[in-house]
Length: 253
Image 1 (cartoon, rainbow, N blue to C red):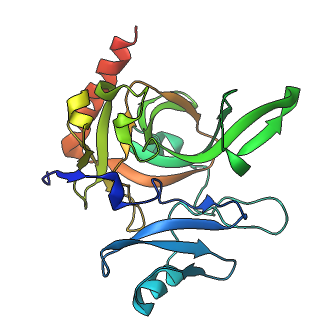
Image 2: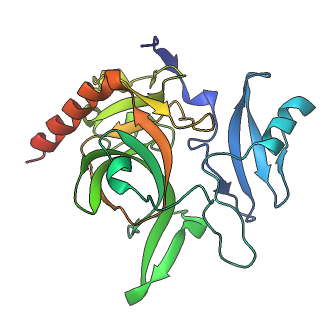
């Protein structure tokens, strides 16, 4: 397992590496430039992705040619369609096994005190509001027709330092081609679980340094919804992954 390193929030400005809409309705993301060793801003347009802060034409061309793995494409009119890489799995029992990581369009009730939620909010039946976003999960327990999966979050790039988050229920998650990192103060607050490495499904899959698995919260995910394969927990870390899930599950009762 690669050695860990200390990560501070100043190393990046955006916690998701997913397309985010600004106040003018434009989509952008931050991507890491290995050439300039800094985060650069990438704006989405209908024809290509324009780098507005890159230090060389070479770096800019990389983003024009490559579609990010979490892209939600713009569509004519008011409706945006999911990227075609999101699809219903034809063999769900083979796909939704323990350790599988995937992303899905996830909708949940909006809290009454929520602020600054923008276009992610939709008003539904009974005049209630729901919040929708692309979220990442890892399967912990396959069932008949659905599975239980634990979420992967950055908590606004604060990790378990965010108030109200239970540090001991979380673990760092990273891809096998990157190092696990801890934010300052996370270990002191009680995040003592070993990191979990994920074998990415392809070269376009990446996780931000502040990504954390919450083993205390398992969501039911139906097999008939569109999902995108992100990879799987590596064999070396599966024993810890299963142990952490079982520990938090039992501790909840």
